[in-house]
Image (tube, rainbow, N blue to C red; front, side):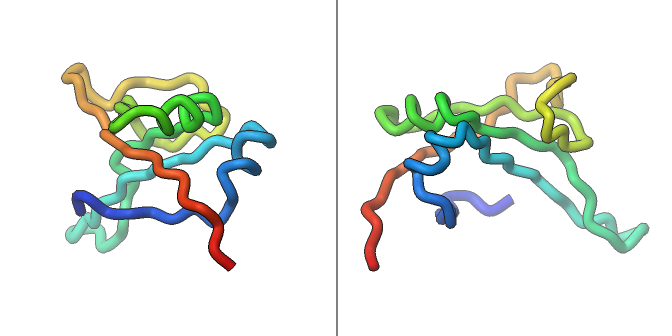
Amino acid sequence: VIFHEKVHMQESLETILKEDMSIFFEFKHYKPKKKYVSTRCFTFMEGDEIKSSLNQKSTQLELYKKPTRLLKKPLNLFSIKKLYLNISVINLPLIL
């Protein structure tokens, strides 16, 4: 896991909110014995969560068991422990 990484979205915040998009985060790991990369867990942010997180310092997202479910149902928590992805959303002005 790499901490304090910045991720830049190719879509503008206005487009994401207008079209009610969601942003998915998949956490993957390498399996040396089987020699491939596997999804460990995933989480996502819906448009309303993105908008409300702009006013907060950090937002916590629950982690869910694989496989990644793009339809967002049914969802099962990754662990009985309280594990979260802590994320900060920053809206930067578009620079051309």
